[in-house]
Amino acid sequence: MRVVVLGGGFAGLEFVESARRIIPDAEITMIEKRDKFLYIPSNPEILSGKVTPDGISGDLRKFAEKHSANFVREEITSVDFASKLVKTAGREIPFDYCVVAIGAEQSYFGIPGAQEHSHSVYSLEDTIKAKVALDGDRLPKSVAVVGAGLTGVEVAGELLDFFKDKGVNGKVYLVEALQKVLPGFRDKVSNYVHEFLNKRGVEIMLNKIVKEVKAGVLSFADGSKLDFEILIWTAGVKPCSLSEKLDLPKDRRGWIETETSLLSDTKGVAAIGDIASISFGEEIAGKNVEEAERQAKHLAKNLRRLDAEKPLKPYKPINTIKYPRAFISLGEDQGVLLTKRLFLKGKFIYRMKKRLEKKYMARFE
Image (cartoon, rainbow, N blue to C red):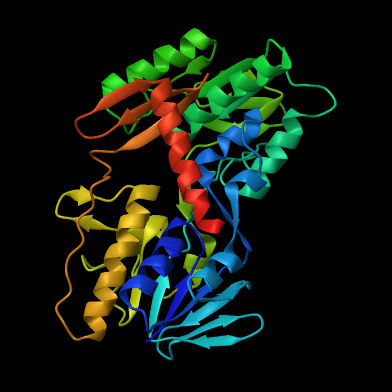
């Protein structure tokens, strides 16, 4: 069995590890244009200096070798699903099964100037650029964060810690188009995080739809404006641009659709992680690490069943849009843990989050 894995993020790595255990005789090839894995949940802490880029990065080639998989560091140009060939600039790689785990990328929603005049923390390269900007010759006095979702509130908390560490009385603005912080979470959590950040000094601006961004100025749909020195954009993601080249079923937003087995209706092709649109009844899988890893494990088992001509089992998400689960760090070594039934907060939650990071990064040792 020849399995090609497109992407070296959480979903791709978990699939390689699970497939090697479940399908020991499989020939696995992972293709990724970068040679480093990035533990994205800890990116905001690069801004405060609590972690370094090297500390949350892993060698993908070393990981692949550890699991007896091939690693190809090349950019994918196209995939011929009929001929079962992945094409890169330098080669053609045949497969029996193709696992699409290419993830997502930052979305700017077509807002004029948003990408040109902001920084992102969605990739390692962009996060490093944001850190360089913060550590410039003259420390900024004001930073605006657009998007008060999970990443946005974490960035706001780390920026406060950055200013505190530098001894600077900097101003942090958290801008959200909807009516509350953490729009996807229940009110009890949103209200707590709002109050916590507000008490720390974050100016939270709700119901503010960004209309245009110019150098140093945010313009809103209601006619108001906000001056800033540095802007960090955390407002949403979109499908990885590579997905546009893939002739696979997609939903209206461009995410790759799958059957409940996690396979596409294209024979021998599956999609997992952020790039995939996965649902089971009324439950829609969230785009998070927990779901990416659970999907990868389930798919490895289903590919084994498929190869043995056995019935496939449906996948049921648990970290869903309706009932999200998350660890959220808020700065000052404080954290929040949310599940369907639990809402816990405190320094011990932050320590739990850091232990998960340490445990995960041990895979690359």
